[in-house]
Image (cartoon, rainbow, N blue to C red):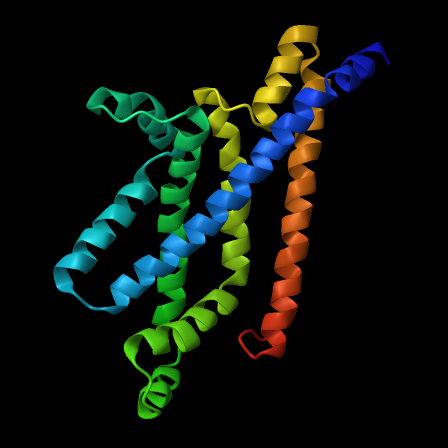
Amino acid sequence: MQQWSAIWGARDIYIDGFFTTVYLFVTSSILAFLLGCVFLYIHEGGKHLTNRLLMSFVSVMRTLPFLILAYLMYYGLPQVGIRFEAGTAGLLALWIYHGAYFFEIFRGQRIVMPKGLIEAAVAHGFRRHQVFIHIVLPYVTMSSLPLLGNQLIICLKDTAFLCIITVQEITAAANSVQATYFIPMKAFVVAIALYWIVGLGLEFGIRKMQLFSRKRGFMHV
């Protein structure tokens, strides 16, 4: 009971860490989604050199451990005169890293997209950007919701690595509490519960979007 009292006394640390984690997760997810959309639009253009550079960048991100990227953003860039605060470096790392994965998810769905949808849009006089915004993007987004949900969960878990570069998120809060009161089990159980709360909210949102997607005909039961 005394240990739980210590946890309660340190609640402000957990609250601050929770809101930092939610901010990093939500902001980086939105930015990564937009980056994936931009990459897909560039890829749709069909420029050989541009596509090769894009795919090379994505390949590097897919084979690079996220923790190393976070290290490079925070500790490596100052060596070339570029310096970010820990939170900004972490946010940029999450954005770039998961933007590449979002693009790969979208690209995979674009490959299996029925050609008739594009042909019909072109026949009706849609221009390239109109086809992408009104046909391609809604289709690849709605049809890939389960994959996007998994990627978002990974993004949420990757925020925990940012404690290594001194970002005060949930894991850093738990580590601070266990180091102060020497109660690692209970300190990290609380951290797990906080991650779980965010994950439940994410799963609920994905399920609602899947129901909407099925009603619009993008997914099948």
